[in-house]
Image 1 (spheres, rainbow, N blue to C red):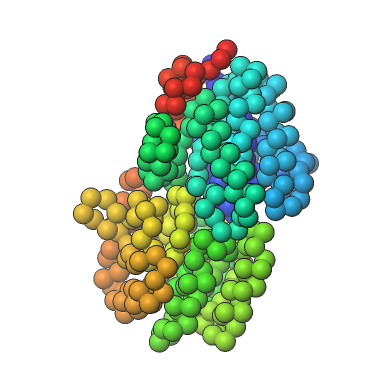
Image 2: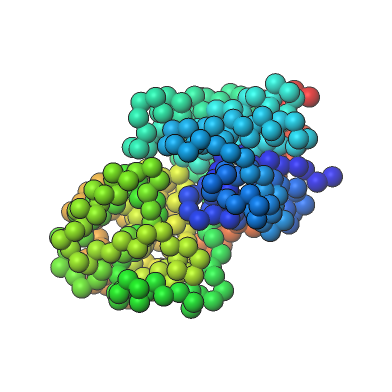
Length: 385
């Protein structure tokens, strides 16, 4: 019998941006290919409810929400929970801490729930005190009220074990497959007058450390450009701050969000990829950059090191997080020694393909579902039915 899965806590699929959306865009169709029946709950306004009813075999159910920074996700998740609880799903799968707040509601009706912790979201700078409190409650709900839970990084897995004494599944993110045409239909290079450049690609939010990157790059004596590709998510003030910081350096270029062929082209022409984050969940953009064979420069936070280090081998250049001077020195070293950096990047590409395949991750996720449904929850919470 096909397990029927509902996924709640994302804007919808296919993804335009957002780590959770990117992950589920890759994961959900693979679960369908493995025999699951998957429905993704999407948000009205993000998806066109007349056109977006299915994606690669994944059913899409679009429900309304409240369009505001603090209410958009939580309102949609609550409404989706009420709907999904009575639709006969075998597992209702919540993504991200804030959305896990409602993971206990379906269990009152004998339903099985899964919670995926994509990051310790209460650490993120864009949230105020009350929002952080709600995210903390979501964390407690994921650990104590959900039937079972998954973490996308070993750091989160260890955190849950150390803080709550609970074991959860560790299933990482993967890298998104590249566009078959390698971006040949994109004009992003010409449109932005790009030549040799260092690339940052991701959401323009404080925890990504983009302000540190701009401060550091502005001091470098290099003919490379710095391309900042992405857009803010309820962080327009921060984006304005970034543009003010970069205003006097013509080498720094904001492209906005890049998707599809534009994104592939940006990766394919980059000399270096840089991720100066102070907080991450499991950085998909880093995996994507490594899968393209681009030399990578990353902060030394555990989430990044989990991706670029294995044993005594390091697949990227690592600098001390928030250390602007060390970031600049590391970028200079890579730019000035690109042949050496490309050799390391070639090995990184092989490693990523072997380790972070979405096919492998889908198989592990389905195995976690099967174990939970059979009463073998890592959390020790058995289904009530």
